[in-house]
Structure formats: structure tokens, C-alpha cells
Picture 1 (tube, rainbow, N blue to C red):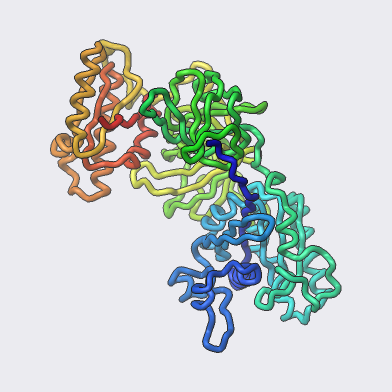
Picture 2 (cartoon, rainbow, N blue to C red):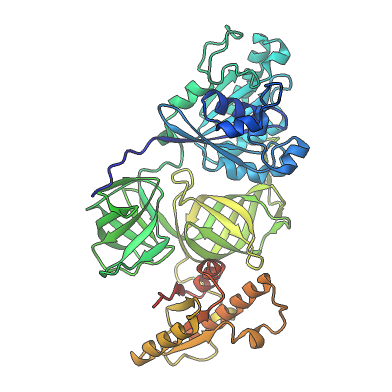
Length: 545
């Protein structure tokens, strides 16, 4: 049976604006007037007097309720007859710019709230610049609290002129300015009789007319980052992941990168059912006509525009770490499902989003700063410019030791490794003598209660076939490698990292390491894949027996 279920069109929007401009109230009104509030939630925000506290619909954190501001990104879902919506209520306070950055990064439309009394302020400019940097082509400026200026059309015209001047300076291609009163619902879902002087689209009308495919980063090219290799009982391999862009069909010719091998799509599964054609975004598994060396982090690509396999990235980065980012810093880059070590080669400039100027060569980026950064990578990543494809043009930065997410980036340019350039650090990885065998290409890692037995058997099997192998036990190495560690969860992660270093040295000497990790899970390997990439290796999970 083939999957034929229709897929409703989905539009993603994000709100932004200064503190107390009424973002949460506008969202609450939008959800209420479209009939999208569940009865229990409606009852929870309705006072005994019958008055509805619309702002409380999205201000879900205790700290938000206490301070009366939005801190985290709150996501809400609603539908109309024509389409589905995912709505992100992003923080207005400058301190939480990093949250606004991540909430807007997936949006098709940005709705920026402007207080009719104050007009365009610093945060308005900041949010408009961030929306533009993130490729949001459609911006709606909702001039809120018009009732507090007497619903004066002249004041609306003044604010509208300020906003159009800002859009022209930034380069926003599509801006609509709407007068609204969020608490009363004027011009949000229904046209207001109190603004007869405004004859443009109201908020919901504009949202219904925007085509998601019109936005930047909506590439027609096929991009399927491989998240998992599936080995069905009947044999063969299927490659599972989320189709990031394009339309994939049985019979399409695709390229597996960074290897560069071509194959034909033999079969597609969606939720366990065969499908002839799948449109992004959708999770699926594909079977290829050729038996290729495909692993987690590889990219299956198709279409006329080929992505780039690069070793250097130029990117707009929003820094989220408490400690400043400085040139020379080492970080892990997580791009789609691939991890790779990186070094900050240069911080070209820091953006002053309020004044719309760039500070050249600042030397560092502090918390919530946005700047252009050059990253040198230890291994290949396959990218598109962010303006062409948001999924393959974005990445996160992770602290190598703490495993905390400390930044997010949008690719503006990628460069391949220079011809003949060294791509791994000799001080870390080059063995002191020539190995007896060719370096091994991978490290195997076994989990579960029987991990030690599985690792020993796998090592024996490899050795019997002529491939030198060695079983390493994470528990057994604890006293020797990590006797200095007290034994907390963070220390266990550090111990696992040390075992990975040992395994990679063995691999360089031509021995396939098989690591037994009975206390770990597959997600514990993600920070280690960058280490493996630095050594030119793959880190694979040993299939359960």
C-alpha cells in the first residue's frame, strides 16, 4: 500500500518586538479568534469576571509570569481552512536576543510589534535586521495599541513611514504595516470598523496569502541528510533521515556526498509504507540501486545546484555562550547529522543591529552578539548558502568540553580545503613510527548490558579475517585513564572522550578498536564524532547481536 495522504500546507511565523509591545497578547488574540484555544486552556486564562488574559496563553514560564515578559521561545499551533501554522513567540528583551534568533531562524514570516506611541525604537531595528539576516523575506509590522493614540491615522502614517525607511535601509523586500489593537482584536482576524481609513490586508488575510515556497532558503534541490543506516532482516540497506528540501521520487538519480558516488533511488518508505514521491519536509527512508559506503552525517543530494564539500566556512554567527568567543577558539560544529571540529580563524566584524553599522575586527563576540566569523574545519561538511537552503546552510556550535550549545550560524560562503593542505593535527594524531598496517578507517562502539561480549566477539571476527582489532572496555579503563575524575555524569563524558582518543590512536596504527560501553547510549557519541572526524575516521555503532 502506497502513502497517498495529502499534506496540508504549513506556514511558520515568528513574532518579535520590544518588551510590552503586546506580542503575547496578539498571539493570544490570534489563537482565540481562530478557535484554536483548547477549552481547558481557555478556562485557565479566564478570570471570574469573564475577562480573558490573552498574554497568559504563551507566557508559560514562572519567571515570565513574575517579570511580565517573554523569556523563552513559546511555540503554538493553529489552523485555518486553508493551512496549518506554527507560531513562535520570541522574547523582546535584548538580553534574550539568542532566543529570538533561534525562534526566527525557521520562520517564513516575521511579525514585528511596534508600539504606536513610541514608533520605531532600538529593538525594532534589531529585530528587523535579524529577520533579514535569517532570510525572512516577508515582514509584517503590526502597529499595536492604536487605541492609546486615539486611532489616529496621522500617527499611523508617521510610524509606517519610519518602518518603510528602515526596510529600505536594511533591504527587506516585502513589508506590510497594519494598525492593530491586540487586546480588542482590531485588524487581526476580523477587519475593524474603528479604522475605516485603513483598507489594506488585515493580519490573518496576509498570513493566508503568503506562499512558504516564496521564502529564502526554500530550495527545490533534493537534500537528505542521513541520520541512520537501517539494515532490514531481508538484507540490503536503507538510509533514514528528514528530507530537508526538494521532491524525491523513485527512479531519481542522486549523489552521495562527500564521497561523490551516484546511484538511483530504488525505493522510498514513509512511516513504514512505500511511497513513489515525497515532498519536503518529511521523514523517510530510501534504498539505493548501488551498495555505497553511506553513513550517518552523509548527504544524499539531487537537483541542478550541487552543494559544496568545504573545509572553511564564512558564516553569520549568533553567540550564545556566557564566555566570549575569541579567535583561535576550538569548537564542535554540528551540521545536519555530522559533527566536525573547528577553529575560529577570524572574527571579521560584529553587527550593531540597533545603529545598523558593522564594527570591523572586534576580536571577540560576547553573549547575544551577532557577527561574521570564519571557521576552519577538521573534516568536510557539505553545505549550501543559507539563503538557498536553510537546513544545509545552518549549524550549531558546541563547546568541546562541556557539550553545551554556545552558538548558531548561517553559512554565507564555503571554501574547499587548499590543494595539498594538511587536514588533521599532526601533534595529536600522527603516530611516532610507521604503522605495521594501513590506518583503520573507523572505530566501532558497542552499547548495552552485553557490550563487552559483543565487542570481544567483533574483535575476534575481525582478527580472524586478517584485520587487526582490539576490544576496549570503558569500565575497565576507568581507573587507569581517569583516576583523577570523581565520577559525576560530566566526568563520565570526559572519560568517554579519553577512551575515544585512545581508540583513534589505535586506529592510526592500523588496528580497528571495538569499544564496549555498557553504561552509555548512542547519543553519548555525538560529541565524539568531531574527534573522529579530526583523525579522518568514522565512529560507528556496533549492531546488536
